[in-house]
Length: 111
Image (cartoon, rainbow, N blue to C red; front, side, top):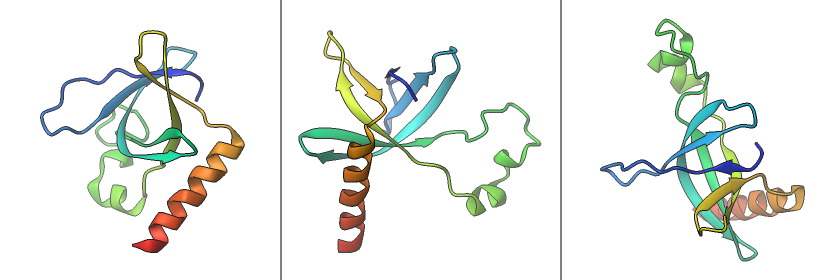
C-alpha cells in the first residue's frame, strides 16, 4: 500500500467506507474497523469489503460459509492529511506498525 487517497461516500449507518487505489489504478474498498491513537498519530484498522475483488458469483469469496472460515485480512494504515486537510492513508513505518500492534494486543488483553 502506497500513499492512498480516501473518499468516504455517504453511508446511512455511519460505517466508514474507504475507497483506495494503488499506483496502477486498481480500486479497493475497505471498512474502517477502528482507529487507534499511538504516539500522537492515528492508525486505522481496515478490513477489505471484498477479499478477492472478483465479480464471479460462483467464486468461494461469495460463499457465506466459506467466508466465516476465512477471516479477512486487516490492514493497518497511518492517517495523515493532505494540503487541503483531507485524510490520506499511508503505510506505517516498521516501528509504527510494531507500536500499533503492541498497543492493540494490550487493549485486547484488557478485555
